[in-house]
Image (tube, rainbow, N blue to C red; front, side, top):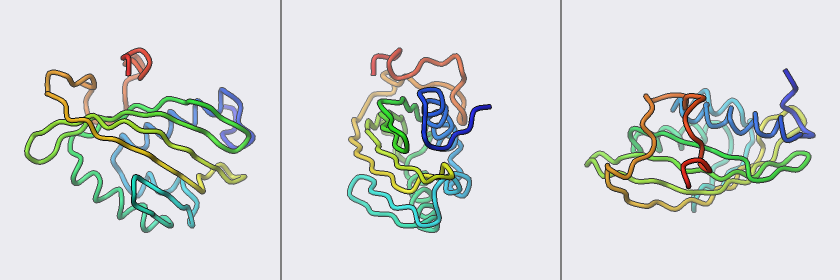
Length: 153
């Protein structure tokens, strides 16, 4: 397998994006935190997160609120040590209201391939249950499930 450390190629950047999607779809904050540097810095919406302990706390809160979370990420652009991603995820709140959240992320990696900076802009769109597009069982998106472009998102 090709190494997933900078400098990225289209192949390695695309693989890095899919692995990030898989990790977030696990909804396991500890597992997800390990792909970030110990002193990683985030801006997620209007929240600023610093370091793995805060990442774990943030993701624990996130997935306690965003139930039945399913995410699709797609590469937008890349350079030697940076990747830009667009994404959409579906989730419901504890009252049964469904949402599709759309966003963009900018990632910067260290030489070991750990993400040291993550900047995310996200907007939530209320949707009807009939508008949902993500129906796979919780966990990893199946390889044959359409991506964002194929779904028209």
